[in-house]
Image 1 (cartoon, rainbow, N blue to C red):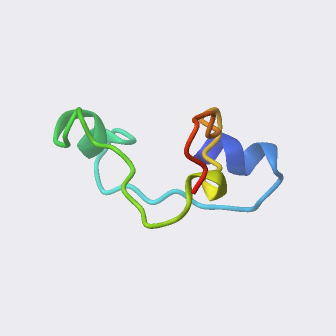
Image 2 (image 1 turned 135 degrees about the vertical axis):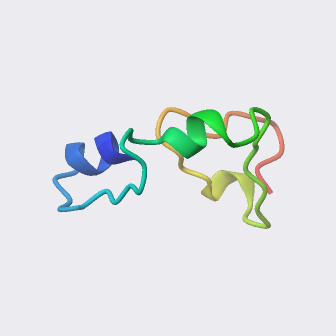
Amino acid sequence: MQLELTQEACQHIVLEQSPQASYAWRNQRWDSFTLVTPTPNWQIRLPGAEYQGDEPE
């Protein structure tokens, strides 16, 4: 996310409690986390993961 904000020239600050950035997400979260949303598929615009499927709604 930080890279995308930088590329779009959006000012931002990343706050992290751990001495290593993203430690909790890398070491204490689920490996199988997936995006679950009631939003139609065609509205999901994640960097590098644009919807390409057959069910846009």
